[in-house]
Length: 88
Image (cartoon, rainbow, N blue to C red):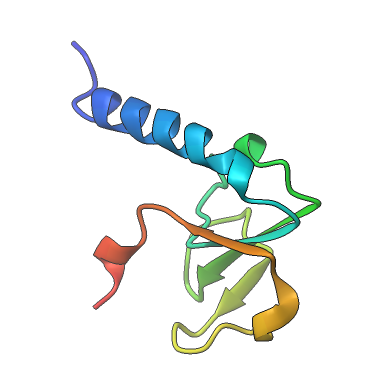
């Protein structure tokens, strides 16, 4: 039996891989989880951000869910995937 999410995740990965080369420099991954797409980016630095209480062990920073703990100019690119469906 095939995992029912296999085809959706394969297509998502393929599309992120196609888009990743335009992102550069210091990248912020909002809702990073286990950082499954980090290898696709040629970032000088890849920072993972998760909400407090997350089970992610790979996040570099945690935040309360209202204001990111960074200045606007701290990152060259921002990436977020499979996150908005969790936002109220």
